Image 1 (tube, one colour):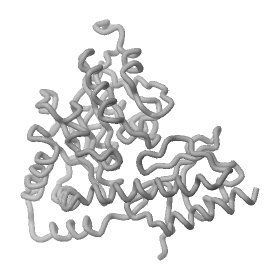
Image 2 (cartoon, helix red, strand yellow; image 1 turned 90 degrees about the vertical axis):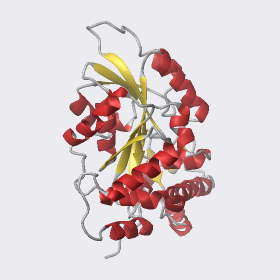
Image 3 (cartoon, helix red, strand yellow; image 1 turned 60 degrees about the horizontal axis):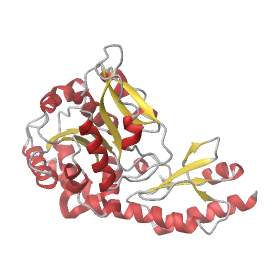
Image 4 (cartoon, one colour; image 1 turned 120 degrees about the vertical axis):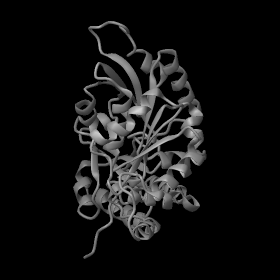
Length: 346
């Protein structure tokens, strides 16, 4: 069976061979369930060496589950989450966070997918008023849903803002590896180094079969509830060693970084080649492994006959093209040629 290449999502890529090999190695014999195994303990210690000694790590199945566990741990139902209007937890998680936590999402329109202190402060009002949901968490995506990135200075400014208002800072890091690779900083610098309180750290989009990690920083009192929230949220794996083994592979010889750098480089190459097609306009700055482009409407379906992808904004004729750890230069060349032929046919 031949599987066609896709530019729809890095979720559509397979699993990295080194990850699959790690799963096979961990399959030897029996191990205690629910995270009581040696694999899980070993990998959690590796996380702490990378993210900091106070990193409190909890493995889960998927990205929505990671956000539910992280935010469910931090919040009570009368408290609210400030996020962008295109945040994944608002647009693409079927109300999971609201359903599970009972907390309101306060959404903010942004031109580039990023919150700023000024935008946050507009939503922090009526604090202490029992008639009004109380903002408690600012949740951002790194990289954002538009593929843009928060710099270290922007993150520190947000941290200062949340501290002033007694708020917590959560990062949806489904593509956190891509952000660190693009910015040229360590995972610790981009997380604990900027003072964030909780991170949903992605593995699936960067070459794992399944699995994400929820990490709390700064010895938060709220984090003590995380194991119970994870169990209630149905995110506690009975055979957790198979999630841990995948992260072990990702952390070995910086596989996470190699994979993310490659995906980013392929997106950059795609954008560079698209610049020579006058009918295509890049809609947002290409900073990670996403390319958003305005495409003539007549060409979209013609391109999609060969390569599957999603339309991001039908009204504006903007599509999203994603590169993955296994995208090749040959894939890019074929894709660009298909685009060139489709737009010219109109």
